[in-house]
Length: 244
Ligand SMILES: Nc1ncnc2c1ncn2[C@@H]1O[C@H](COP(=O)(O)OP(=O)(O)OP(=O)(O)O)[C@@H](O)[C@H]1O
Image 1 (cartoon, rainbow, N blue to C red):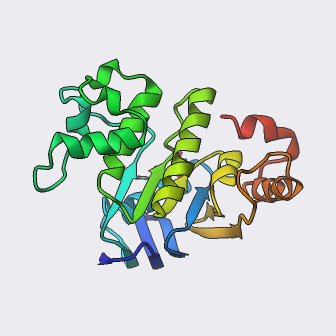
Image 2: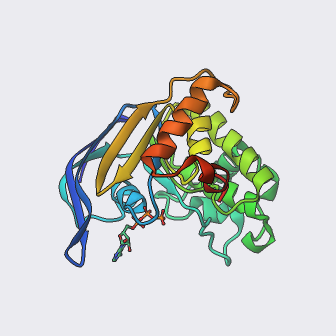
């Protein structure tokens, strides 16, 4: 995998197979630096596989992958080490033995400065997810990869976490790729939405809507219908498909 110094991502002819079955199959994708892109697609279509490849966690691929050197990933499960205090979790794996103040700065950015010395098991689900986000931010990423980071949160915590990510993105200006099952979440946050199908990006649309966004905006509603059609979801299924 090649790396460059900017936030842009270039993927060409990317293929990843498991047991002889291609999950990513000649995929092309370009992300502009600073762009917030949502990646949608049916369960099992290969979204996490693509994200893991971009994160450098899976190198058994063919094709070209050009990503920024500084990149970080946050998963649906916060993956905190229970035997390390929150601030130590934030610094986990960082080179050069950075001090607690570095962790606390990232924790403050996600509104968790006061929990720095806590044990992970004492955090709520939303707090743990924010700690996981701080662990990504402390790496000062040009590319932030988010794999369903809000999937396990209750509705209210989820809304707060979505707002936080939107704020962080606007403040930091990094490139974001967000894997989500939730079309409404994609339309709330992203300025581009992709649908992955049959191992490639099968649909690609700009989400060119003013912020903050309102679900009542007719342009948003039209995009929503189109994306759901791309996902093969009929109108009658709308309510359940976007809240699960
Ligand atoms: N390490 C692995 N070994 C074998 N098969 C794998 C491996 N990782 C992923 N797969 C398979 O690749 C396919 C795509 O998985 P992936 O997790 O990327 O899908 P996804 O779109 O992220 O799904 P979901 O939305 O349910 O998280 C699945 O069929 C999965 O079983």
